[in-house]
Image 1: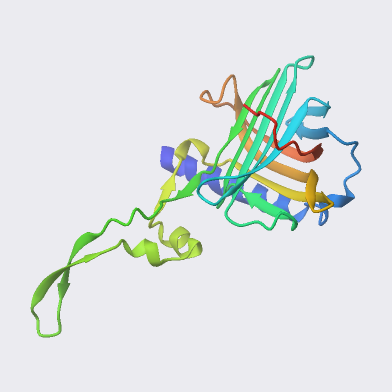
Image 2: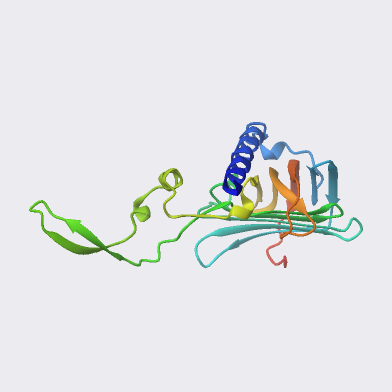
Length: 232
């Protein structure tokens, strides 16, 4: 019964994600926001933040590009973090990242509680380890061969369809999050990032204690990039 409820929540999350994605603005550059400001609606709460925020773009040792957006507003008692890892990025093109297939995290703490989203599905990494398989030859003899798991030769779509090489986080079933990021480039350097975001997750007293599902809607930001910033 629990698994059925989790599956229902996951499918509902996918439906909401598709609806939100369909309504997402085509161009983030059309966002009319002052620099270093962010706004969103979470459940029934309309949240507007200004100035107390940082954005970073950094190359990781694994080849990923990580974009981090951190916000802290002590007057409103709000903390927020968006962190997305992208496997390849030219530093110029707009990027679309979503929790169904990508590495992304959203965390919001405010007076109503905590909203936390990480991917409900992660793809296992190939460790290079091989396993012994029993193979029957055409002459009806049997031999044993070492092979890598079959999912190492599958695309992400094939792995999702078969469930092979996929790690499911049941605590995040029903949650979804996506963000579109567009860099503002001047003199060959990314000076700011603008974008939109939306999603759905449960809200509780903390990230471990789940509550009712809430929509994260109309999220948008315009933030200067500080490569030397420190984000929690």
